[in-house]
Length: 461
Image (tube, rainbow, N blue to C red):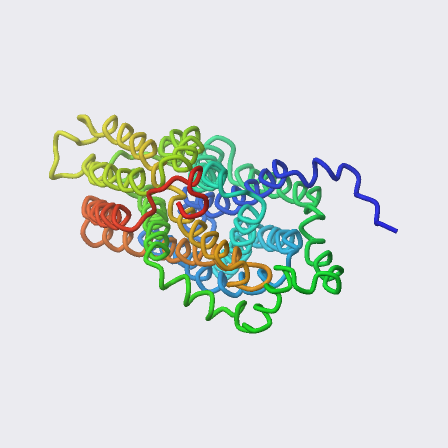
């Protein structure tokens, strides 16, 4: 007797609702990462009573710790995630970790509690990232992967940038605990969506139906694949997967894209609040609005950029995006710098800075998500040629663990690089180094990224 379907099974297991659930999870993770940025100085100086001269050091340490732990946790989480077809339970566990970590960070009882909460946020957020993107890969076909990833990266970026924006506005207008009520509401929506979601039963039953027909179809292609898999006991081992993937230059450049974009964004988050306070005497509210300017263009146009990638390929849009971001990053360091009196706070510095932030947000949509999309295409291409090359459950989680590791390294390197350069040489030289990084990535993307569209060529593009 067949088990009855859960109530509302059709819409609860639909691809639309699964995509919604995953994007909410990804938004929550990145929202929590950036939320603390504009209020961190308040937490360090007011709640903990630490001298303001130490603020930049503590800010850099807290933001870098998040990335460091993500690098360590990502491959471990992905290894176990790829051994089970059930994605819902890991997402719920990640949510619990995010909730506890966020509570500890908000309380800020002492330095130890603050760092402990940030550690829990990092590990739980890493799990949400890896498993969430793996779910998208499992349930979205290659023809629509670019548009879906574009939508997902819209929410990812929205979390990264809207976190600081909301925190700055809420702290300035309503106070500390009113500000922290926002991420708690986001987590509540997240947990409700995950509890409602039901994974499609045809995905879970696929291996069973194969086993039931083994005796009748012993010479079927499925049996041959099973035989091949038994002859390759190391197919799902971590070493086997990473050896194959990291030997492909497209994967390496894709990871470099993710690392570079995250380094730039996290570097801006670590240095921008203090720079704007020193250069323009801006507080948390105008600083939060600057992050909002950075987000607005890509929030509305990132899905369109993904649609374009589905039809035009990754190479040209990504290379062009990096090329255009280089001069914009340089311009971000000009307003308020003593070497450029025409761009001082009393001259044209403020409108110039705002226009540059908007332009950066506009052209960054050509770059955001391109790295993870390239890695996804390579995985799908290799699995299309050999379905069991990465084991019976595929390599989706492990592929996004690599993306998460690149994201984590970027979250660690960005604040360290930008923070140290800004503190030692000035904000202008910090943005100049990031601009040079953009030019390097532009050349690498043009040389190695795929050109064929996924719409016409399948997962190869």
